[in-house]
Amino acid sequence: MENLHDESFLLLQLGARIKFLRKEKKLSQLDLALEAGVAKNYISDLENGRRNPSVLILNRICIALNIQLEDLFKGVSDLNYLL
Image (cartoon, rainbow, N blue to C red; front, side, top):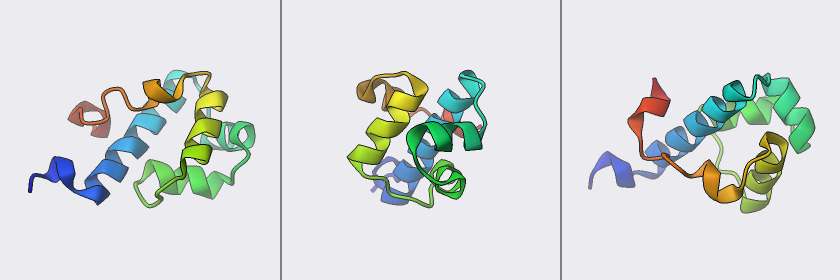
């Protein structure tokens, strides 16, 4: 199987996407954590692919980022977010 189907790779991509969107909104990890109602360490772990978040947590993050849930997954398979 290709890396694109590897679950840990997917979590890394999702985390990179969240980090990209957070920085685009000029939010710190703490800002995003407070807005989403999660711990700052959770955001850090998520952005580094060490967490497998629930849909409910992802929805809270999207609300904090003022985006739709579907927008969170746009480009997740694009390696540019990992740079």
